[in-house]
Length: 614
Image (cartoon, rainbow, N blue to C red):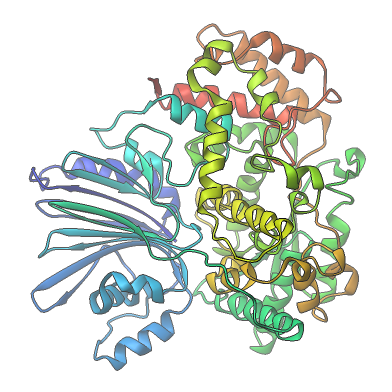
């Protein structure tokens, strides 16, 4: 994993402006602490920060290769899980290799097959390739958007970077935000509309898209989209195929020249990943798998079961680790650290985020990084198999909005009337929701109920999952840890997308097809454990420290957040205490304490990023 950045300018010779490219690359150092490189020509500058995972000696970037009179240079962030097969195909076509790296395989794939190479890639990636002869740039991003990529085009200049901060660090960019960007932050956030870069003139290259840029053209197009069709397989074939795909993708993602661990919560998804990984390592006579779990000080004392979180993770983690024989590490976090890391988490995201859900992952990743460089995690199973409550609760299914953000009115109520009038949050969210529904690949002949579940599945994969993938990438890469997500393998996503809902929800049990497919690799009660979300601290000290932090914001007349919020209503929430009515800021886990954390982050973000409101 790495960080990439670049600058294309057709009207100016940028050879003497190395410092501007360096300014874009430097903020990405955390993504690639093991090395750096740049290449600057008359009209193109490419920069790279490297995290070594495969082939320490042979994978240095920028990397260049020649074919005839064409020279191509790549900067790349990601991993290809089928690079050995691709290398074999390319060698069969006559290409030779100087290294063992997937970087060289990716670059050679483009040299051999051009833009069509992306359809052959299995992995997580964001990369840029400069054609020195034609003076063109090719950008591409993986199908599910596991790896981030942003760009900005102004006049004849294109800037790109793994993170927004890289683009904003270029001297010609300003951190300006208009009403639409503000609506993204305060009405949609911490989610983002696909393709939206929040800041003026900044865009995100959408998952499954490529961009081709030249002196007289700029083309952005999808190379992959979900397609709907009748599912032809029997139940037995379906469960067998799901198991085969899960086992294959987990096994592929264990390849590395550095230690690999798994993140284990004791839930179905992470336990399945861990079980497959452990079995593979044992079959290879390798050392036992190291697993890591997260917990909070006094979790047992303050935890209260809810319909979303019925029990604690810790006993389940212990059971799975014992059953599989893993070497387990339990990381326990306390409230002071959660507060200390609140602003570093914002800086990692470049935006206000998910409060302790972000900060705990940042601290967790820091601890894992002390012993490992690569981890595997269970994200995406709930989105593709239908595990979230909004797939199952009638009120959520019937909601005419994003099902994880049904109480937008509660969010709007704590904003100032003038700010609400400026960003029009209700209309904005409604428009973005309609746009998302317009994209859904329909299946003729489905019942209204099946069609609605397909809509919710599409919303979850394209609007909710990117928020979690963004969080996972930023918090882990902020400490130089690469976390892979096997359930995001596009082959698995494509197959499961068209499995009938009655099978996904087999026996009226969420993710029923996955549970049946993976029987036998874990104890039955683990296989059947009800979904439990990523843990959030229930400790009342977290509410207290966030309340105090927000109090400091409210009492400072220089706080840039103040014109945007209704201080009277915010104070009423603060005064109600930790047991007061909760404003569900986002999803299942962000209540009032997390709302305070979001506002603290938002204030610091406006200040530190010198945001100009348009």
